[in-house]
Length: 280
Image (spheres, rainbow, N blue to C red):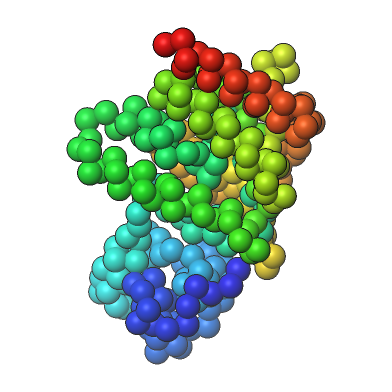
């Protein structure tokens, strides 16, 4: 994964990395030696120093203890972890921007990178019923910024599997659903880097029932896994666990409809929602 920046004053994460490097070198530790004391790899330390990975608070506490830096790195960590997205997703969002291939399974909903603004707003309002409107607007805006990841010549390959439930669940009303599914169809016809398959009801049980999964591959680092529940998420880089999820994803991909049949089903569902909207 390439460094986000080499300028320590460019953003809080870069400053955290430069301070970690300074304190480590002043203490006479190599990245590997510090990693051994902090129970992580030297390359992981390097990713923090190069501002590739967002700092972790628990590790920052360990670094402060080992390097005798009081709470310096912990305070910088809090600044560096500021994000427009939910804190539990922020690490995954950073990795997402660096991935060359994204493989996602969504059991109930259209994934965030493929959502329209109206669909995203309906989902976010349902999940945050008691939040003020400005909070909802900010979250929607951040999600729409994320969708730009799939634009341009350096965009990753995005291979998504959604369950047929996502095509049938009335989210925001018929007009919103018709627009969302029409948007999906347009993306699939116009963006060669986007591939989508639908897991039909007829496929029965599958490996990811009730579990959103995103597998990320990189040009210069091992793959990682992100999995999410309603109000929490986890980035996992343990190779055996990632490999097990990749195997399950391959099985799900084999059980899903082909991309061509999936597009036909999406366009058919979009027409059904459009008709429902006309009759409501």
